[in-house]
Amino acid sequence: MSRTPPGGDLLRGSRDPAALEPLIVLADQALRDWQPHWSGFLSAVAWEEAMERLGSLSELHLEAEGGRPQAERCRLLLLRRDLAAGSTPPTAPLAGLEVSGNFLFDPAEPGDVRAGLLAAGALDGELGDLWLRGDRGAQVIVDPQLAARLGGTTARVRSVEVKLEARGLDQLQPPTRPQPRQLATVEASLRLDAVASAGFGLSRSRMADLVRRGAARVNWQPVTTPSRDLKTGDRIQLENRGELTVLSIQPTKRQRWRLELQRH
Image 1 (cartoon, helix red, strand yellow):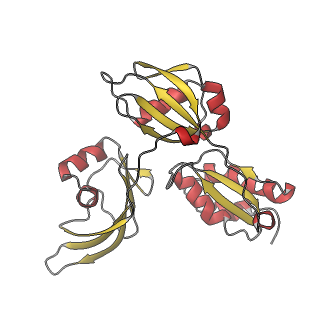
Image 2: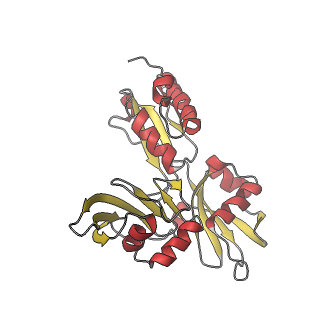
């Protein structure tokens, strides 16, 4: 195999070539200089595809780290497999950022907090997972340089002025995620709102409303149409509620659908 990753082959058919191409360059650098390299924070679509495609390079070792179990946004470690064998991987460059403010009268969504941090000077690749803390603000996993740059400053999220403070990862309190569990349901259709309401334990009308508001994604892609049909293998992500995987779909004798689901 050539030491230079075959960029054209790796990019062909990519779901997100704009994100994958810089990672191919970074992989090439790791193979050439024999040094470990960390990417910025990547969306789940980007890092999962990179793990799949770049993982085919026999000389390259990859690891994803986002600072908490089942993190959505992760940084990728790229280094030569020779260096990874029998050695402890370098510590991921991760830090925390506390976003504190009174959102009692102007509630914010995670996207609002993210937009406020970007307006304050953060770069997309410096921001990892983000979660709300009721009406008190949010916590974010970030690049250490961003934590140092914004720590001790103020920013604005919607109409609320917030205080930004650097935190260690051990000072963060990410929401807990339940252990994966298997579910079975019989539905009249394969619509997103029907299947997801059963999987997440919400009413169908509530689920449909969340989808229209942009709180749901299918295979990490935003979806705002509750009537979208699902298929085996689809993964539904619901904001602050985890992920649902469609394991199998079987028709019943009464023209309904029997589904096996796994909730993470």
